[in-house]
Length: 502
Image (cartoon, rainbow, N blue to C red):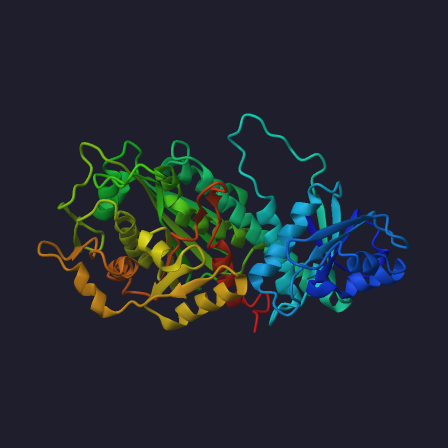
């Protein structure tokens, strides 16, 4: 898809379709008013007759509107003018796309950027529009034997800005948003692949392609023998039950100064999670291919940073395994030794993500990081607590926590802070080892993060539990690409490449 920005009046756009907003109570947006006046009141007459009321979900497509240069005008209902949130703004853009796909138009001039969203600037609206459009158009059909492309696919969107003074900022917003969408699409593609294709070895090969695709990216992969030499007993304990060998994948993007401490992103990469000996129920077990969405999201973030040539050092570390039952798989009651030297009593083999993450978090210290952010589909308890709306957020450094919360609000890819109090550590006590890998029924999301906190004392760290937001179940099953948007907004805020929302 091609995206660009342009200033100019809607009736002068020589293009396949001009899109304008109509608000609830039949109120026309500024561009809709211009089109109405130039056409002699055609739009207002249609609105008065009830052809469109302005409610969200409504649309009206007009052909050959008098005194305009465009082939079509699409009116999109936007609801109450003063109550348009981030979610509603994205929904409005997606409603536009769904209607346009059957319109025959291929090039679009969108004036939905003139919609007022509280405390959001034009660059934010352009970025959100692009991400919403790409999300709506995304399809994963690589494995289908027959693919039917649209008759006339959408090719180009032009976003309206109010004057030439906004063109430069608009182009920056387009560039940033297209890079974020690239990262989200990569994350979705990797996550949606089945476990028989996307194995730890496959994930490592895909990480190697980033090195080939982008200058400044360096990928390295440790095999099980090399991890054993480093003492990664927790990670290797999970991998032991599978015929698929585990990998520790590291992707370095060094766009900043040599002496700049990197942001390290650690992504859980369990390419299929059966639960191991503590076997999961069979229903919806197919969705456990999504237990590597953390890995997919940090690789997507690296790709977006490389696409933008971001002047910052970013490192992605992906511990990748399959968690399977087998003759030599770990058992409840086993004790393993992590890379840090801490011993861990395995009380449940389905709490495997924290075992591979703890060794990766210890390994991350070698980079002397500025901050470390781990991303993991870690606990079902997080789904119970927060549902599908926000990722769980915990950590040991309040400024980092606040920056991630702000980035989530700005990007619409939200997270919510949960406590990481010392009180919860008691639940992880073990009679036989330094620490147990689960803390009982209560506060499962918190105790999982408390476990990880034992391995992050040497740096500033935040943990994102994305179990509720990484994929959608049901008929529209599929990966969401979250939290690539959140992570990229955090990075862009750090760089001040685009102005953060006030």
